[in-house]
Length: 369
Image (cartoon, rainbow, N blue to C red; front, side, top):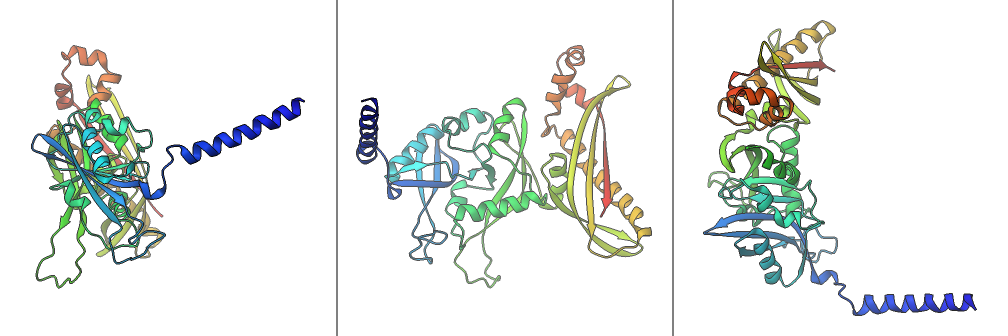
């Protein structure tokens, strides 16, 4: 009897599952819009949000019909908040937008970033959005980046993300994620990679109708607005100090010959302590250098010392410049508040006074491999 009752309940459960899957709110793939990237701009007193929605009919789709067509469509919405603008994007698209695949968020140059928890409230309220989504700053409008036509077997967002990640990996720009941006609430400065749509010159001879988008440096954000642009050629030292550079390159001169060295395996350690009654900041950087020319065992140590000295010099200059401009992108003031509250109290709570008196030392150790 019990066995018959169990079978009866199982049949009811199966029938209920079929009914819910058939008559419930399940959406077909045609009714779901997969958002891969988002741009946020300011337009008047409103936010303008532009999202890239994946189109399975273009290049980069597994079920492509016409690869000559773009693989995305852009949808825009306005609102007093980003969340309201996103809601309008949903209404305009006529689809249920899914943000679980979003890899990139681009901010326009006029967006106020002083309150990231408010700016990114739409992400905090959506458990599908990854905290590792990449954040970048557009040199002008984020909508220009979102609407750029890129010819690729990838989706447009994947192409943008790929060039951004490579630039960050090699220290040309400094990586920033959604998690990084949300931690800005604890300090006054941060740093973002900058992307720009490059206009083709008439003399370039390029016949392609595709747009060209490129990383053009890293922007220091202070009190929510862009404060300074660090060009790519000066990005490596800043990226190293931010623990964001995984690789890089540097040129050394040894016995009259130029040697280009690939840098990798970076390890960075910060330490803040007191020395002679003042704060002393140290940063130890370990790197492996692989020269493009074959060198003798006798040349190994001189090359390592030269590279160590050069990287120490360049990183020290970058640190001094940022601190001189009041651009604490490393959260040093937070370190002071956390580790030396008594010293901060003795100086009437002025972290600016303590950092102005602080001494620093950058020590690079390069191993030639």
